[in-house]
Image (cartoon, rainbow, N blue to C red; front, side):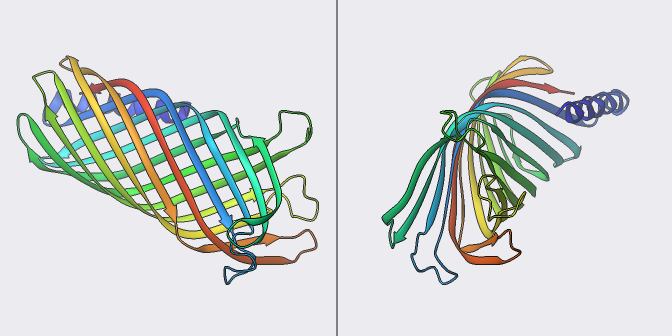
Length: 296
């Protein structure tokens, strides 16, 4: 994170010097922090056909949240064309996870049920892309963007009760792929602006887990998940301009990400592998942040 901020500051300094010479380009840097929270759940079937039973094991992380730190750059490189990049890192400090196993279809004949802690780990997102100003009026703008993004979750299964003192299992998920985005803004007055954005992500999903207490599983990778999916983000922003080059803002975001059917590949300590159907992965979350935007 420190390295990223250092690179951003160097970019801002160098670009600002260039603007002083040409006066024809603009750059904005936004930094925010606040609170973010997400839920993530997945289930697998008993075999590759999705049967025996149709839901064999199910994990649900709930209210895993903490403080995010984010930075975003947008550079108007030429006329209506811009380049953008953003990064966000959330430090997880709260959350729980439930682990359920079943012998019957549709979550019947439950054979295992435990509630654990999940107050450790992180959420990380970054993206790069290009934007184009479709409409650029005095009080209204409409922009379109396209690019590539990566969203990762590093989730833990822990026990704070002392019943399983050595429990330190992990589930690390990655959502990668292209996105398209539209953003519109309306000037309420000369200083106050309301804007909204909608982003659609087409992604490849993969995850790796380490169930550290199960001796007949391999370590550090006990099993993998592979699937294809999508993600939708809704963003709302209220920005107030304090000075010519400085504005403050408040943001709200809600997102829904989901995969279709995929594969669960289990690695056993004797060298064998077992494959079954990954039914789907669901991820929902929200964030409330505030920060500042510097323009050059």
